[in-house]
Length: 299
Ligand code: SF4
Image (tube, rainbow, N blue to C red; front, side, top):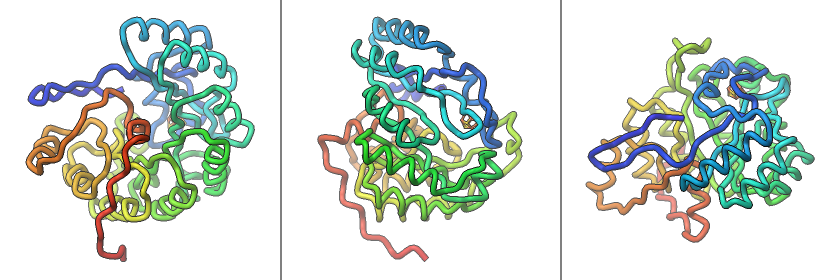
């Protein structure tokens, strides 16, 4: 979804495409996205189109894909008809990551049946953000319950916390971190609200840098699962990447050249994985997450 190329380090974005099972359509039209993200995905609007696309990319040597799409009015990506197609993608050897939106017990069971490798699941704890930004008539508890269902049914899940979802204002992120910590997930991905052209929030500001860093510190302190800095973040703010390195985050999606310079200047060994940012959980299954550094208490 993102053009990425750092010639100095000879790395570029490739090998893990995103598809939208609803094409460019979304009934929710969240104010921070306005379905714009779907425009960068390959439309696969029937199960057979999805399988056909999967076969094509497998033949070309791709390793996996992200199944995504717009949501219905209740915040759910309608993947129910794609369970067999996902199983087929798994059979041909692709890793399948999926954006699901809200999940109830029934949907969690279906995801388990499909055998997805990772669910990318937003945790939102701000009632105001749910109502104003996501246009939803539900509560933070619905997000928390969804995570619980996924964990209970042993579906691999990488919760995402969007720092500053409510137009860049603090949005109960520390509460979201506590929820993730209490459910024992496979990974945590921190992303940051980034004003996007063509959306109602295009003129909003990203959250204050200090606040982003505070959430990252708190998360690293509370969560022992692998953590990564996700692809959605204001790229110009280098401190976020440096902080991720200093805190021992396990991954950074699309690191800048400055971040790679910073990592090498500290003699930290790194690997490049051509996959989506939640894959850090996948790759960390066999490696222990580093000990969280001792930090001063969060005020
Ligand atoms: S539901 Fe997803 S695709 Fe639709 S507007 Fe919200 S973030 Fe964008």
